[in-house]
Image (tube, rainbow over the protein chains, first blue to last red):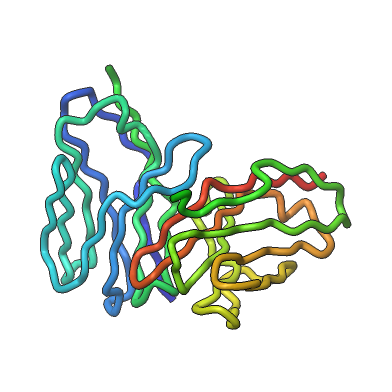
Length: 110
Length: 110
């Protein structure tokens, strides 16, 4: 089955860019998502990309997809303290079959 | 428009007790899901319902049962709770490709 890997922690200074990386194993994954989880809350959809795309930009968020290496990244420009949260990468061949990574805890230093 | 709602928010059970976690969505979504989130494990799919009247096992279904009561509601039942079921439980729904999550139920089994 699909396996999704993320680094567990990332620390950046306020105003810098953050880059959170994710790798997946199943080349048939066509749906790739980034979710944000704040303490004590559910998962909030941030953005997504389909496998026929290489890049997607949405305000401060940029998603890059390297299909050959099965590598997905989320870049947050001008990182703010409100961006401190856990970020989950999810991959799947269909929305019934999403596999989530363990999450990357982003800490923003003022 | 409340999105996905879950009740209760918190619950403490003794080993062997039973309980039902409730989930409802007001987005007219066809598909609904139950996940559990454990530290260091990410999210794991327990059961899902692709449409009203159907349910299917996910990655970790043992010890759980589900009911898709109608299009809006999808409940998760623990017949005989065990300490290994201490977790945060999330319900989600989707119309096509993207899943939207509820705020979660924090369950402790003593």
